[in-house]
Length: 78
Image (cartoon, rainbow, N blue to C red):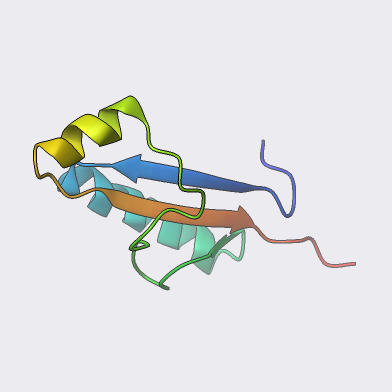
């Protein structure tokens, strides 16, 4: 469970997975559950927190693109 105001990052090198994740996340965004912290309807060009995972380092070295998602759960109305 993600608290109101809590956020998460998702990173992947798999375009098909990124597109599926985007569909699911957009559904939650339309539901007003989540807020995209980057480009509405898309992924971020850079991660919000610039730490690099070992997988990310390896995939970048292979020239693969990394898809970043940055979302936050919306605050509940007062």
